[in-house]
Length: 273
Ligand code: DGL
Image 1: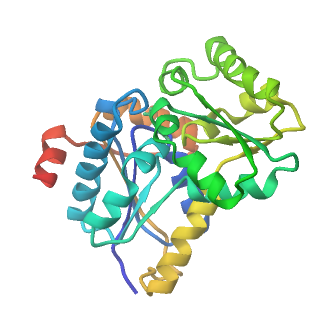
Image 2 (image 1 turned 180 degrees about the vertical axis):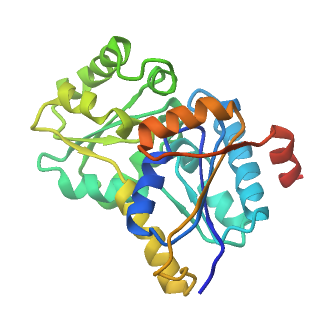
């Protein structure tokens, strides 16, 4: 048994889609979630910079005595997963690979689209992983730079979001993909908008549930689960505005988030120094 919490991080509230699935799968575990709102969005930044941010956050969470870290951000995963696994003593679980598995299994016409941030598309990680599983798949990546700021903005379900999604979906519809990976943890927060844009014949894939399963299996195999009869407690941290995070978190997670703690960037930098 291991009573330490699990650390989860993202650039913002997107990782709450992964946290939600973790809470469903492991209600007895404690979690500490960090949103790096002060530096959001990660998508347009150079991958090396995002790698540095991910390293700082992961080392900060490790110093908070977490037993496992979930990288609940596709951009950070694309930029930094191998380096995080090399640097940290605790296991690191990430998004991305589970989505690729699901997408390759789901496609019937072997035409798969990807919607993701610029950084994720530029990293080429999805294309590599898709082709490692099925070299015959035709793969169509589309960077969606407008989406994360809109989802984190004042009107996430508004007309501008609808227009942006339609615009990004258009080239994938033209390419006749039958499966689309939502390759950013923010995107499931507006899933109905994607579903309307693509219709019923396109399968939308995202990996929060598989990632949560991965976390649960890792804890079980390593014998570091918490007592199953207990109820978990959650801590929320942000480098940005705690009140704004609390509001967005409540809305998207439908969880009465109590206190949100502010973490200064200097504290993150200090953990990595
Ligand atoms: N949720 C992050 C991801 O999965 C968003 C990145 C960003 O801040 O642009 O990529």
